[in-house]
Image (cartoon, rainbow, N blue to C red; front, side, top):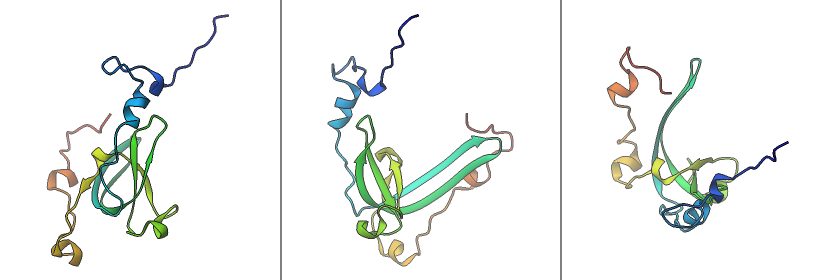
Length: 131
């Protein structure tokens, strides 16, 4: 019987840097400070009719990393991390999924509400669901 070998992706050596992918990721910083207002937008198709779509502005309340060292963020509708964590937050967002929002008078007073573009709300009837 042949022995089975398992490899963790983060232990594979990146041929460009000569380091493991985890070592590369651990050198990356969290670039969005805790207490920053960010915008998130997601549209996910899960198959068989199941999907979700959300568009929200939330506060960054925690920095952490996943098993391969990728910097991740927790966000919450509450700005105070001591109130938001651990049960009132949403976790696992990469920096690429977060857009920093400048606090303007319109945002603070609710006059700058979020919206979906028309084509995002009503996609073409011939469009295929995401793979």
